[in-house]
Picture 1 (cartoon, rainbow, N blue to C red):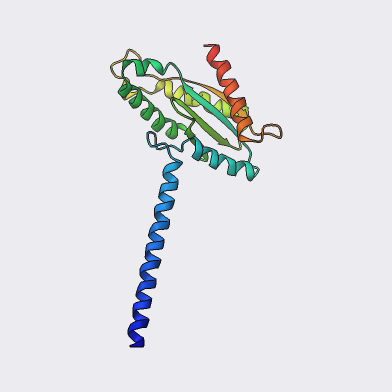
Picture 2 (cartoon, rainbow, N blue to C red):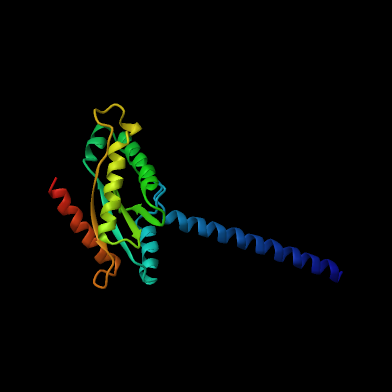
Length: 186
């Protein structure tokens, strides 16, 4: 009788333990979903900020760039479906063109993205972005085959973490300021 009770108790413990493990996995998956942009599969603003905050706390050296697709409105004016296709194709290529150890995420909503370049100052970041712009200039977007130009360009604003720029809000504000200046000059 005691053997049966012991066996039943062990079985209940195993079942409860299995349920707990499955629920923990489910919670982790749900948390990941809350930090991922469902449209582009990139980290969303919240997820990106969380990753970047870890780098700030670890006192890592990095620069950030906020990039904005130029004249994106023309794709959405043609059709939102086309805009969506361009956005997805842009993200796939952006991830491919970026160096390893680079974080990229969706910056709020729309056609803006934020990139964190590990151990790069502003000068090196500009070099990398110039190379990426050239790669986009030479890439024909499949989604734009009906257009006279199948290329997509972007503008950027860059900021580097420093003793004065060492929190997310300040870094984003500095990069956004640069981005707006660049957009005005177009």
